[in-house]
Image (cartoon, rainbow, N blue to C red; front, top):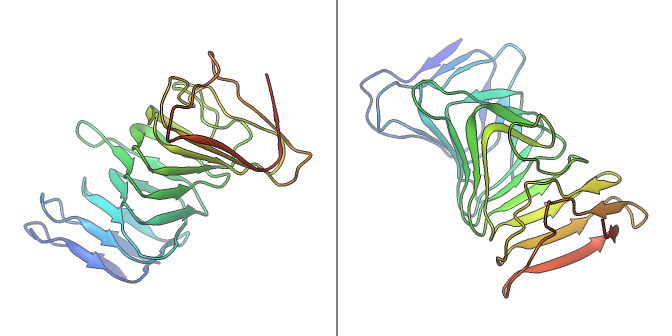
Length: 220
């Protein structure tokens, strides 16, 4: 079975519940016809999603999950939304860009999944990134860490929540300049070690903090 939003459709497509894709789901190619999802995203192994260069925004009021590796052209986690990845995401450029934005007040829980592709990733001021990779977040073009898009932008006033299942590095893409960043260390147990491995250490200005919930922070 298939669902197609006809070309020429100029109104947003709003789904307050789940999107369950076992067939083919094609968005309109017309500007102004974007998709807003309030529930979970579930793509089966037979499901095909054609984003058609349209924006998909997760804007639910409770925790949302993405299951089934999916390719997007434009993707946003809205302020107040909380998206948990059970599988990976690929950002693919169709025309000139393919941005994935976690907006101010939004939360992206990557777990141990990977966000990759030839697009970009941006964590805005006051947005939260929950990081499960033992490598943390790493600068492009390295193929390491949770975020592996071609362009990676991490705010100096973002919230970086490390949740490794064992020893974990911050990764060299953790912003090190003075800023009101928040770093939360919550590893699987207190014996697990967390190391900051940026090139110049880190500086946290007024309004930011280092919060150690579990794990041992070791000076590198």
